[in-house]
Length: 186
Ligand SMILES: [Zn+2]
Ligand SMILES: [Zn+2]
Image (cartoon, rainbow, N blue to C red; front, top):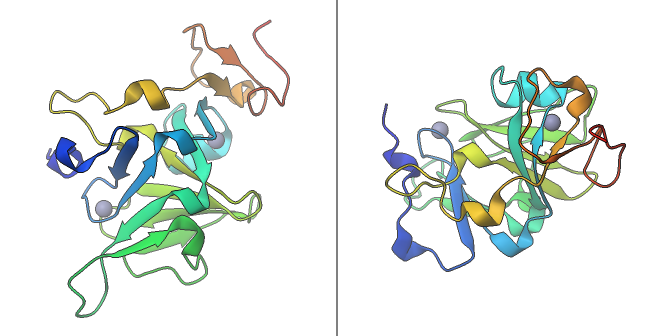
């Protein structure tokens, strides 16, 4: 297994910036930690089936779509990848390096996968103007820890009503989003 695609170049980052990307490294993104709207472990049935390829739950990080900058290989002869805000991606006709998928249940949410390795790199919500990325895809320090973990570590378990694995790590458990749904662990 080759993890070098996700290894962080510390010289490239300022104190607030995080980078992530798909497994093969062709599609990458960057954002600043101070833009994080929500960071949580999501136990919803869509994440269980679509995002993590059958994971019991995933670590999702929500950001304004304007604050997520995607770097996508150009098609054709252009040598430089295009840098696009998630808000600027035409989800009906995404660049060739990305495949878009949305479900009938939540048609306003479009998951973008790398066309090469299939990794789900981002989910764009056209209703809220936010984009989700996943903690597991963030750049790592040489020993494997996620760079700036303290700035993106989850604060809650959300959509815990459909959990497949019971977690007892001290974080609050919610039926929906943190602070705007029923608390399930009190
Ligand atoms: Zn890829
Ligand atoms: Zn979810």
